[in-house]
Image (cartoon, rainbow, N blue to C red; front, side):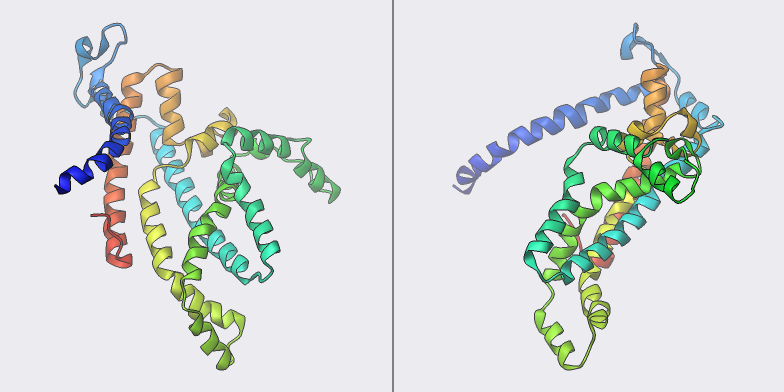
Length: 295
């Protein structure tokens, strides 16, 4: 009888299950190419089986170490910088008492999140060009124009800052929700004790946000090998491959541009295995330190 009532809900699950099976599990059959010398004319069934030769070849390439380092370094900077800016911004928004001003600020900072990197990339390329508004502004202070998107020393940090610009507004939603759940009586008691606003933030607001901060930081560990393909693909060029080339862009060039399908698949499989381990670790840490669990 209970099952009969639950049938409509199970039917509602079917579209999601089918999409997952077709677009997430179906392509996993292609992982076999990582262990073959894949030739499109022969297909996966008749291509030569080479075992772990592709993985050995990858780890002996001179630029693989740099690509892995770029991926981890950029992803780590994005996680830390975005978390700090998001928390500070959420605290500042929370302190705004005028509702109209508060909603206006939130709408403005949410907007970039809903724009794709194709649009944002075009805006940034125009702003950061040699004759763009940024260099014109710097020129008014007597600073020589810089090639921001062609400078290996600046490019990783531009990726971090622009990624933060896109995501920080939307990220404040979670922290503002955490702040709103704090008991208002704690603030009233602190006012009676003579605590300043800064003291209230330090001793009440931040401890109240601690569980969600720990949860989001630990879960973000799973994306340490995901530095953001869309953003980097739109903004980078051969001049900044040294500092901006990450695993995803390297796989794109090797697989689609150079037609090294087996090598690209092997790199993708390596990345997926490491990401799975990190996600499992982050889930364990989230359960241990933030009491978060799905199952």
